[in-house]
Amino acid sequence: MTAFDVSPIFRPVLDSAAEYRREWGTIEASIEELIDDVELLQLKLEEKSLALTESQQQLADEREQLNLERTENRRLLQLLEQQDARLSETLTELRRLSCEQHQLQEALVMAAESSLVVSEDVRESQSHALSTSSAAAAELASELKEVRKLLEEQAARHNDVPAVIVPSPNASQSMPAANAPAAAAAEESANNNPVVNSVMAQFAKLQKDVAQRKKRR
Image (cartoon, rainbow, N blue to C red; front, top):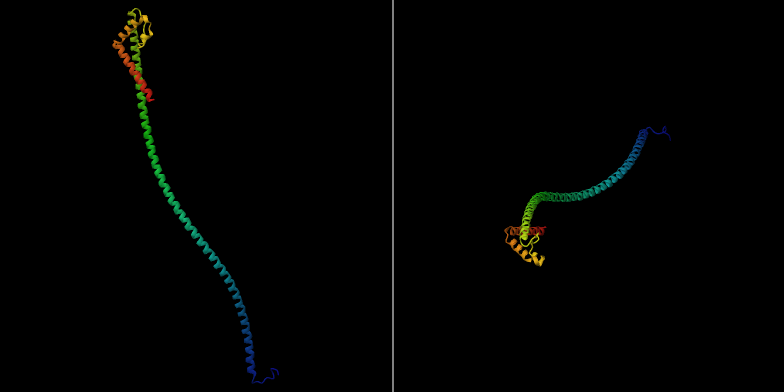
């Protein structure tokens, strides 16, 4: 039976069925397209999921690195605070040492000035002592010449006794036995002479001063 043999009664039914078939074909094509779109979306979702997983892993790594950096920063901050404290202590110590150095320099300057003053005083004392000693020695030499001249004159008066250069307590022992009376007389006369006594006293004082200077050196 063909389409031309169908009863006119069933013609609308057949037309409706044909229309349904066409629409169903359109629906099937749309479903296939939708399935393709869903599969494509699924692939994209999988890619997005992988990318999201990688991003989460990267974010976790970055978070861990950030925690490590924070820990390192805290440690460096503590070290910086310690270094700052040590620097402050060092600066305080340097200020103290600078103050002590300044005081020491002032003390050294004062000591140097005092040393110069003392050296000048010592130099003046030595110069004065030297001039005094030179004057005393010159005076003593002059008086010794006078004593020598006096002793020579006194010795010449007693039996032409040879002149005695320096009076000595042992002079009577060094002379010959024949001249002993004359020497004794000359020595007694010299002891009674005020010039001789003054010369001997100055000579003893000079010897004492020389001995004291030797002890100080």
